[in-house]
Image 1 (cartoon, rainbow, N blue to C red):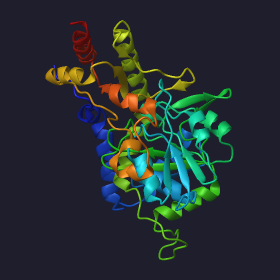
Image 2 (image 1 turned 90 degrees about the horizontal axis):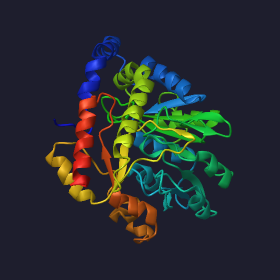
Image 3 (image 1 turned 90 degrees about the vertical axis):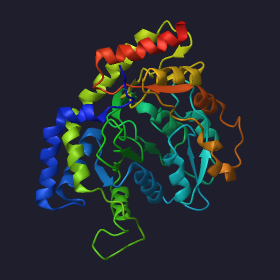
Image 4 (image 1 turned 135 degrees about the vertical axis):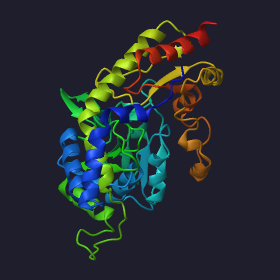
Length: 370
């Protein structure tokens, strides 16, 4: 049977009435930008993330850009991050006027190597941006310990609801950095029906700045303390996200169950390395990503069986043509470069049936056992 990489229609079928009711509430109110639905969503995400402030914006990309601007990143400053991530992580550094500085990743988790980040610090460093890749939090406490005094922007676009054991207590994604950022792109564990994003922080002054920046640089209409952006979340997206939010932990738990089912099925396949989860982490598996041998041939085999698969990410950011001006060459981040040649992601969404999971497993095992 065909198994798509993601089936949002299957999810929608389980929550249709809840979503429609909330959407129609917004339509009846005729309040479409910010408003009560957005304010309530901000309160609920702040509670989930255990932060004082959550500030909604138009996209996960804007969440990063506004975070960098709030930290005064600009010409003459540098921001350290990983090259093995979605483009927005670094594209927004460039668009803020700062210089991206790429450092290598840990080979097991795919997340930024804290020691490598420490080695890249200069007098121009304005922030460091760990990415919680594929739903697993980066070792944020190590980054904070190794880079004291340097603001941390946690790119948690793929990890809302993930948590990590830090110094004896559980920490939620977005809870402890200077600023955390989320994306509500439709494919995320908590996804809207369009673009949307959120910034979270414990800092009162930063929160106020972020609220100004998202509304043209002013909190009072027609009065502008600075030049900001038009990055407001619309109420329809907030309504959809509020309908979905109560289901988030159940969905993430189902993703973990699916991942474990795959792990056990592939345990005896030498050419397949299943995802490593740091024992301190509770991963939400936005993606289930293998390291494999003969990836292109495997993908062709899976495509022939109509099994969804995808490569996140085929070219590390430090080697992207648009960043050639930074001067990085092949070999600068060897672990990230190796990952781009070996990773492939399989369906892991919560609505997968056992028969669909078995179909994926059979196709992968068939390829490597023939």
